[in-house]
Image (cartoon, helix red, strand yellow):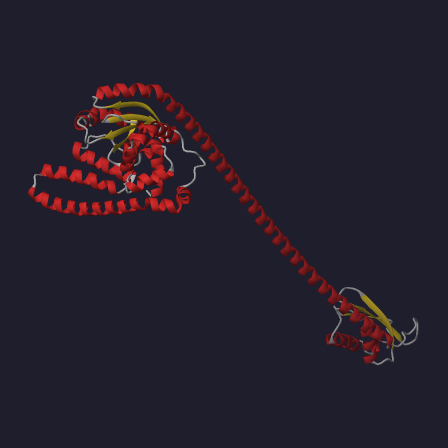
Length: 453
């Protein structure tokens, strides 16, 4: 806890301004307990501010309160050079007090070491407790650390059959109880009070009372010699110890619904606490019902959001699958189109090759026909007609003179019978052999059939 937080707590307790708070805290070496005691020990200050401090402690802090750093800057701006000169004596006093505490601390260590070997154990323990109480004023202890130390001290002194005290500040304990829809049972311990030991042994650590507390409340306890518990007791205006209080709510809405000051038996305490539980417990039931409804609505929204996300993810997966199917179909169609194009190109190439071959044959045939001799007229003397049956079943016929050489006859016939299937030397050889078979003795025979099948 830094100095700005201590100043804020002092202002909340005393309702004074920041300058006065800094004055008393610096005089007390920023020991909040001694500074508050010093403030209320002043006759003009204690009467004037005691009631105002009580009213201020019940009010919620303003939402627009400046941060501690801004408060420090404002204090420095207000005090100025003269204020620093005015505070110089207190700085000297603070340094002296710190030196005294260091010397006392060193003496305490030496005394405890020697006393543990010479003095009785009870006397040594009492001296240690007094010295620790004196030395604790030089430091500000963390609230959770104070709570843990208090719980450990209670268990060591009164046994483990004690309420389960929360190891945190009373504000955090109230917030935790509020979240669990329970009351917060507060115990303020004063070791110097004459009824404290009897109360702890017979009431606070009574098994029946401990069971009752654990079943119905959360529990927080503190030693009023510590800063957190002392501040809390000042806010509650505790007049007698031991003190038991029952709180509901948290933060600015924290309120006391029952209290017991001084010694009380377990039955007396339960008679004080139980009516408050019955009277104010209905609000916890309503709050818990509202909380359960909010949680139900939240879970429903989360489930709806989860369903929506699952549906959205399923839509994405379906869209992704459709896109993959479309890509696969497009690839298949493209492959089919490419195959068709290749087949068409191949077919066109074959057709073009056939057309080129036919065109070449036609040109060859035309060239040969151009060099042919005129065919003898029908009925001419010494002529014979030669009809040749082609491999495709068709026939071709031409008249020849008897005195035409055999080579000329073959050439004329080949040019006249030119056909895509009749190409090459084999055709001329077959045709020559056919004409050789029909010698001159056949003339004039009229018609000679030659088959090239």
